[in-house]
Length: 426
Image 1 (cartoon, rainbow, N blue to C red):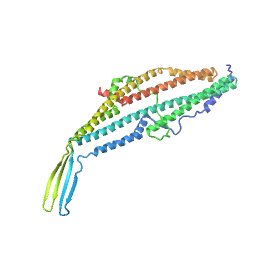
Image 2: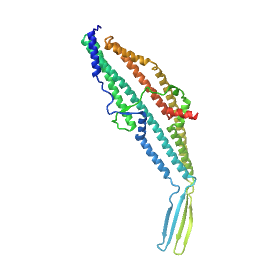
Image 3: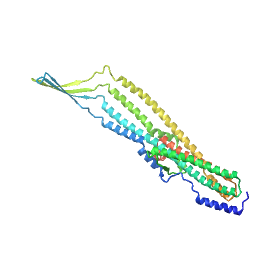
Image 4: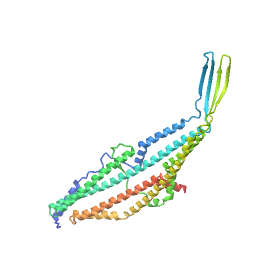
């Protein structure tokens, strides 16, 4: 390509004009709501409808405990025989539970309250995990969209410069069309990311219990990650032990086993019938009499055997469920730990000055093209390689954060709190 000083002057003038006039539509509206991860989690834990429903169940469980009275109400009976001058009998009776049935009912109600608390803790764990994953999905789309918008802006300049070069006869119509095609491809990519952004925002709004029309913007840097030396101190055995001791879903199953055991005790206690004691007062025209009445059903035909057998069968079910859950939790911790290690290794490929060198190479190639010193095809090749690697780097960063989130979800506690508790325990 032959470039004269006059043509270079025209191209530089056109380039400066484009810089001053081209505006790329931004993906983020003026009504955006910037939100940090901690705020998103707190809002979700406060306003999420499912958690609100579990909190109402806590009130029911507490009310059930308060509703277990120590003693039942006595019963008053009166009987008239023979008219006004006939006999009149008053009987005041009260049944008494034997075999510690009241204590068993009280303990059952307390276990039910503990169980709902464990379910609330587990639901909070799952919701926190969903919010974190959704938050980083949103952050990833935002970063890709920003990068795509910068690429669109560059392709706009390339297209306009190519137009000038075509009009001056320096390039063919094929090269001009190539610039146009690249711009259209970048615009299509931005449109697809716009859709992904809206879906990610919708998911965050739903998890937080916020208005579905809100436009949240995740305030986070994907490049910020936990130092490598902190992650290297994590061991699979310690993580698994913490998960088995801390997970709310496993606690709930263990409490369910305690509940079944207490129900069995109550069922065995129910084999002993209630003792009914009554005080009797009898009045007749000629005399008055007082007495005591004892009533005790004989457990001859019904010894609550059916109920006891059912509860014993439930004990076997509880043992199997606990064993299966422990195995599932162990597998989750192992899977998350392996994924985190793999994500760390993948990120190492982007360490060093590779990205800086790629970015510098792209800048130099762009500048050379805008001055007419290189062809459009070379710029496009380097540009596409740059986008490919930058997107891959963003995906790797997001994968690292998600692997860490999955590990925290598996152990039921944040890695920071896990390390703090371990250092205190040590």
